[in-house]
Image (cartoon, rainbow, N blue to C red):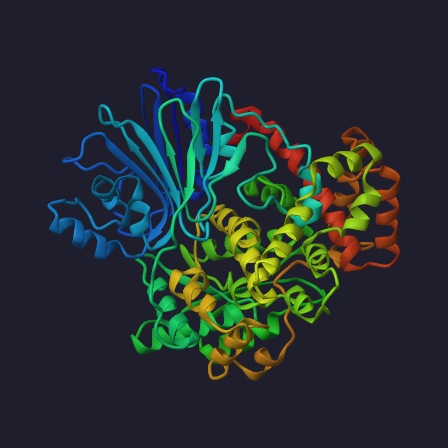
Length: 602
C-alpha cells in the first residue's frame, strides 16, 4: 500500500523537481516508509511507500535489469502475486525479492496494456514504457475502485499528471484549484462526486475496473476491462471465510474494525476463527465511541461481538471537544467534499489503529451495496407500481432532498442547475433506465450502489482517511469472489442482507443479529445542537458574509434552517447544514494548496 504520482508529456523538458517534491510530501502520510521520485525528459514517476508485503524488498519505482526502460509503481496489494511470479519465472523473468509489485514490469512486458486483467487485488498501478518507439503510460485501477487514482490532462501542452490524492495533484504546475460550478449541488444531492468526476474542473478519477492508455501529447484513452474472473465455491459463509483468511495474511500486524453491526461482525468472527485454527494470537479489534452520553452508541454491540469472537478489544473513546480540530484535517485529507459525518469518526479510528502499532485493518465495507442492506433499497422494493420510486431513492441518497435544495439556492444558482442538470437527475435516470431494460429493483439499486456510489462515497473515504495514518484497509466483501457470488444470488437473498444474516447465524451474538440496521457514524444532530461541540464551527462556516460571497445559497434561508435545528435538533436538518459547512470548508482549505510550501509544512 502506497501513494503514487507521475507525469507524462510530449516535450523534452524535465519536470520541476520542486513540484515533484511537493507532490510527494503532500501524500507522504500514506507512505511513510520510503520515498522515491524518478524523472527524465517529459516524464516523472514516484512513490511514497507503506511497506506491507516484503517490507525489506520492493523498492519503487519497480525496475528489472532485463527490462530496461519499463518502470512501474503500485498503490495497493496484488493478492495473486505468488501465482503470477511462478508463471512469469517459467517464462524466464527473474525477480530480486518477493514484493507483490516487483513483477509488474514483467507482467506488462508479457501482456502490454492488458496486464491489469491478470491482477487480483486492490490496486492503482502506473506503468511507464520509455523504450524507443513504444513510449506510453498505462494506468489501471481494480474492479471496484478500492484504490483511487486522480488524473489531469492539459490540452494546451498535452501533459498528463496523476496522483493518489488531489492535494498532491494540485502541486503539479498547471493543475489549478477550480471548483466546478455544480460542486455544491453535487454535495447536497449525492454527498460527494460520483462516477469519474470530482468537484474540480479538469480533474477526474479513473473509473473502477478501467485502464487508461496515454500516448505522448495525447489525452488519456480510458476503457473498462472485463471484471476479474473467479469461480466462488460454497455458500456465502464459505466464500467470505476464504477471503477473510486470504486477506488476514500479511508481513505486518493485522487487526479488524468492529462497529458492532452484522458486516464487520462477520469479518471479525471469521478472522478470529482463522486465528484459532492456525494457533495464532487472537486478533485485535477496534471500535470508536464518544466520551459522554450521545445517541446511537454501538459500543455495547461491538463488545458483544468481541467477546463472542474472543478478540483483544480496543474501545477508543474520542473526546467530542477534539472534533473541530479534526474536521479541518479530515477535509484536507479527503481532497474532495464528502458530506458524511462518518468521516470524522473514520479519521479518529484509524489514528488509534496506527498508534496501537497496526498497519493493516480488515473492514466490513461493501456489504450493504452488494447484499441490499440499505433502508432505501427496502423502500424501493415496497413502492407500489406507478410511484416515482427512483426520485424517492435519489432523495434518500442526498444530504438535502430536492425541495430543500431548491429552497436554499439563489435564483441564479437554481436556474443554472435546472439548465445543466443535477447529479440527482443522473441517479434517477440510471435507475429508471435499468428498470426499463428489465432489471428488477434489487438489481438496479445494487448496480448503482456498487458501480458508482461505493467507490466514490465509501471506498475513497476509507482509503484516504486510513492512509492519512499509514494504515492499509483490506475489504473482504469487495473481493471478486464475494462480488461474483453476491451477484449470482437470487434477488430474495440479496434483499435486506438475508444471505449475510444466514451466514452469521452461528457466528454472531443473537443481540447483534436481531438489532435494527444502524450505520457507524457521528451523531451530527446532537453535535450541532445547542451546546454541541461542532455548533460554533458550523455557525462560523455558514455565516451570512461567507454565503453571500459564494452566491449559491440564500443566507437568510440557511439561517432559518440553522435556527430550526437549534430549536428542534433532528438528523435531516443537521445533515443538510453539515453538507453546506463541509463544502465551504473544503473550498477554503484547498484554495491554499496553490502555495505548495505552506501545505507541505502543515
